[in-house]
Length: 255
Image 1 (cartoon, rainbow, N blue to C red):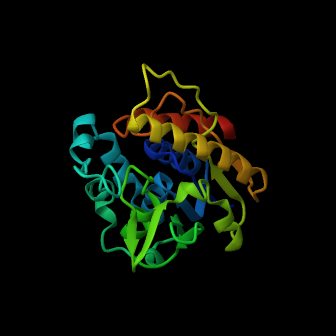
Image 2 (image 1 turned 120 degrees about the horizontal axis):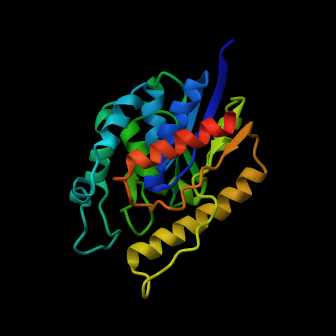
């Protein structure tokens, strides 16, 4: 008998690569993913999984190095809206999602972003995958907000870092939530924190506390919390280690 589950993939920037290892482990353990929601980096992985091309994306992640990632940081010389445009980074991570519609995914796909106007979580469940992902990954202050039909969106982690409720409201059962922001690391700063480290730390603190609160009141079957404290939010080039960490943690949890 097939074991069916729905996944809520949480935010975590580069730590999101751990989702790949978690999904790989679940499939090896005989679980079939029947729906997936995602926030920020979780939205990228959710989209690739929903369209059945996560294996291809894993190969891409494994071949990333620091130099290649840095080339795609399109820094704004006059950062009025954000330090980085984010469009080139999106091109790097979402190349194989272009021209795809959310409603055409093989399994139900829900992408979470935050509306700057209403201050609420907005769920993309139809329309352009690229637009939904771009909205979901727009870390405030770092990336420029995503503009869609005259409305502005920022990172889904601001309002819904692990989008379990989206799956619950749609009637999906046996939900596995993946929290990449616990436990909270105590950092060591060499001198005063700079802009990047301040944004990094602030987002991590906010996501940790909001996630803890939301998951206490959530309808989940299991909550996975791999310890990723040694990884930075922008260390996208550590894909192999992050995928292995997610995989090994999940195998251990279900053994």
